[in-house]
Picture 1 (cartoon, rainbow, N blue to C red):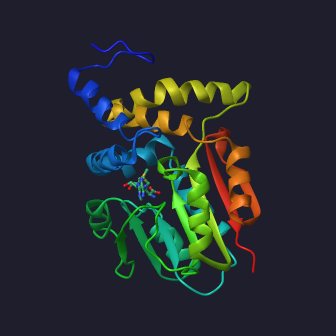
Picture 2 (picture 1 turned 90 degrees about the horizontal axis):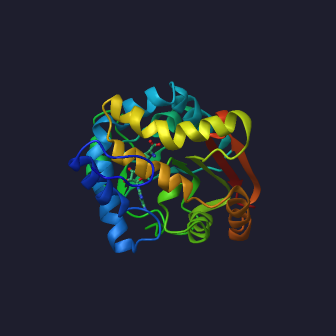
Length: 257
Ligand SMILES: C[S@@+](CC[C@H](N)C(=O)[O-])C[C@H]1O[C@@H](n2cnc3c(N)ncnc32)[C@H](O)[C@@H]1O
């Protein structure tokens, strides 16, 4: 049994999965990270949406709807759903913004799986969020749910978003955040680090994947660094809106023009 910090793994298979998933963490060369991320998300996607909805007590739906609202008002044009996966953000975007949504993800399998639940009309493109295969000024907005932590680096990512968003367009990126403060945030932090992966496993999820999630969230740059990177990339009206107990954060910004 593995006795690494944070607790023993219940079995050898979980320990091996944890080792494979860890290859997707920041700091590893991208040639190893990309296939590890793709494999992990393809393995867990069957349970991912159901489990996240239960673990967030259904709040994830409200957060996604809030993200779509935060993109208004917009210039004409389509919206890009960056790291779209099984497409959980697509319907909130289409319903609120009433315009086409283009989906991009590292995994072709996940983009195909999304089509089982989406209405036709949201084209899919396999690609990397940090190297977008789009011309300058292609989108009215870029939206992203729960994938900022998988970027190669926020400075380059935000410059790339500024390039593909039209003048006057907006970006909104929602991700988990490691709660920092004292009091109730400290209790939540303990829950997030120690309890969540075990609870996810108890509910039928992949404990190793949730441990990887906690580690990748912990490695995200601080609020101050993210906000400075957005401004340095050329965005204005930058905002970081915290969600419940500091567990999530919505970054919002506008390209001037
Ligand atoms: C946690 S899921 C989020 C899915 C969806 N956006 C949502 O709100 O539920 C993360 C997604 O990011 C994708 N992904 C991870 N790294 C990526 C990258 N560098 N470029 C594009 N997609 C990436 C994964 O394939 C996965 O589908």
